[in-house]
Image (cartoon, rainbow, N blue to C red; front, side, top):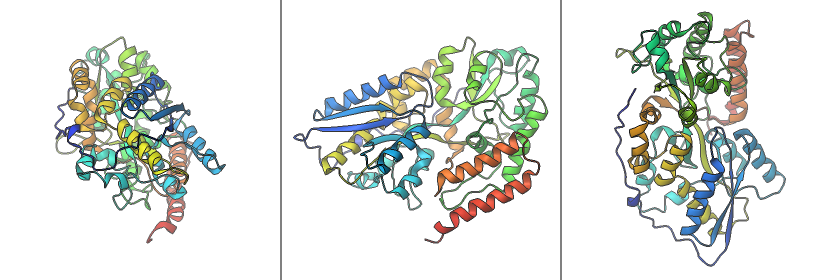
Length: 437
């Protein structure tokens, strides 16, 4: 399915700085940590970005350090800082880690640098609003810059669609159609649909269902989480129905296996991150399409879309020993990573969504989408997207939500309604001290 991008593009050159330029007489080395959640030549890409930055700022060099998964990166940073070490100067971290690091007092707000720009609002407005939801605090202050951001999208095998008489250019638009299509596509050799809900982290894909059913698991208020809701119960019922009808593995598929199964033809449709798009493009031997996630009941237009955002933002760290020049360099490096040119290259390299609408005007992305229109699905879907789970005590809240969802989805919970009620009470108790501050 092709999507037209209707965005108001801003020219990067219109962003005029009034902040002081970097001092050229101080040699600065910035330690930059990054995680990886998708396959690809990530180290090589970051080394290129570092080289281009140093060309503009000859006195600043970037030490690029791969730190494992998102979780490993978070724990590495915390362990180093808590142990008295310096930690990174800049790091790509999960966007949902924001409140944890605000509480730790180890990051600095990007807002103080944005306020020095000639037009701060222009700078902020050239990020997709859906991505900014996990970059700001409850007062609207910007802390981090969107970098490798994503949403899950629907991938489908066009050959399988044609084989069973479905229109290869029309993916399902709502939950009813998803079930109908999946039943037609399922046979002894393949699943009609695979959704990676199995394991310890089902909440991200589950959010698609919750949002499409009218109630996300979180809101803008970081003191609230909504687990024991009618939307949650309806979403769990929909997931159970997919398993009961035999069109999806009961309990969902494993995250890492799902795109591999799709490429192998063992699944006709899958939910997965747009960050897997380049991997699928490079390895699929059949024509495939992409679509919005049809996770909810049809509205009056026949649509039932919903999606969470995901991925990582650029964080600036300060252990209290940095000079103003070092902090300014860290900010400039963060802006470089979030620039339209770098974002366009990052999308081409990985499949992550370029976080600036202006990046989609670039020649690189115009050429990419002309050949592969599938890359337009994720940014177009942002109109239906909401924030990923981010609250105070975010890690603990996510563990609770994932634990109860995993137990229910896998069939290991005998009384789902009671479990949702109990976990909601525990989450409310955890967040209560933060309310009314």
